[in-house]
Length: 216
Image (cartoon, rainbow, N blue to C red; front, top):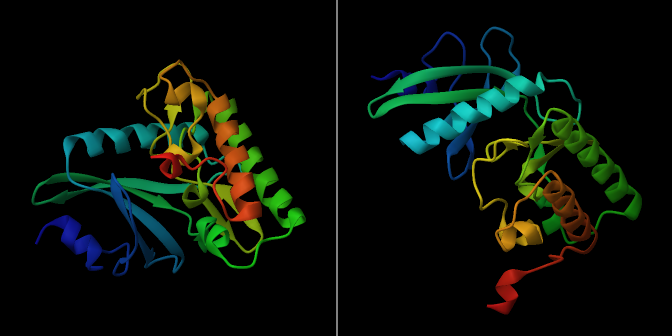
């Protein structure tokens, strides 16, 4: 039995059996309990493939540079690697949150203006810290902003890059993508601010500010 299977089934000294809570393009996300501390954590496990391995290697470098220095950015507790039948997988251990802002966007009852102001203020504080470390998030959207009680944090640095070393010309999810990225121009940290504006509108109205699929 490979070490990835052992990890998923809780056959390790560190973690109980993992429960799937999310499935992204580059990784799968699981919730579990650390056996020694009894604390709940989230483990992000790389999907198979060389490109995914490189992306999560970059993500670890970005997370380490953040140094858990902001209460408004998701905290990284640990990183490690496990062996699978098809190669090595990177794992990132993160603090758990209750849900992402998509749950609020999709809710029938809209949050109040004051509630939205509070959430967006915290998002901006998280983005300000990310920018202060010479990074661009590049993929701000409801799914990548996490909430626990009244505390909001920016999460998922999987598509982030350095301000002076950008990994891709095509960034962001279409509905939140800044114009300069859409037309292939150079971009900078301002693309994150554009995405925050789109997110603000969506929280208030439950609709996209720009819905490109409506014009196809």
